Picture 1 (spheres, helix red, strand yellow):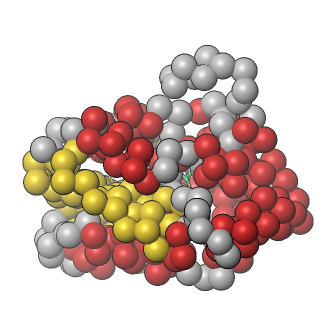
Picture 2 (cartoon, helix red, strand yellow):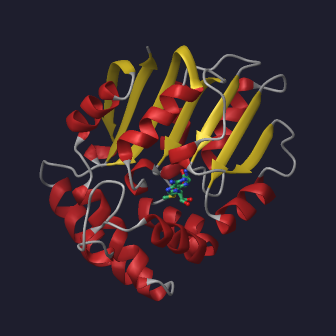
Length: 244
Ligand SMILES: C[S@@+](CC[C@H](N)C(=O)[O-])C[C@H]1O[C@@H](n2cnc3c(N)ncnc32)[C@H](O)[C@@H]1O
């Protein structure tokens, strides 16, 4: 049983994986991750991360945390906003993703890449001015615990920003999305050598709470004044909450 109380239905086809499987999957796909992102989103993913970084409302000289940082792109966006006097700590539990993030941040002295599990962040209470997660919370084996950890590590008044994919509800994009995500992405994944991972991806989006439900969950985890923007024709949701 997982920390969420799930039982035997875990697997790529249900979009639900146990924590060791999630880590192993990201270790496996790390080398193709950036390329697949660009193919799957026609390069738009950079723009979504830039928007999420803006919503973190950071000031020059601030300290920010990017959890489930993957190959590091959102952390680099945050680093641009805190400037040379600030610091960004970017953490993940996949060593292979971290290795790529370290390479990307090699010439960015204000970005520190670290291993950490989002469900047990090794940071003090109120340590950061803001925290972000880009396309990561969907993979947490315990969403509430992960969100509570983010709220704990950010000082009162600071922002927690969650960038995620969501399922569009209105045609024609809902139709396009279902064909693209249910059929084309798993096929591309198989061509890239990992069909399971890219079957898991669309399924995990489908089973993840919708925007309103995610906002309510954030509120239960110590965040207030939750707002969210839905963009990219309804496939991207960016939630922002303030630490109470
Ligand atoms: C889809 S990738 C997103 C990477 C990056 N944030 C981005 O914007 O592209 C999801 C990342 O979440 C990480 N992850 C999932 N669960 C985690 C956990 N409990 N603790 C730390 N990292 C986690 C994975 O290792 C993976 O690198």
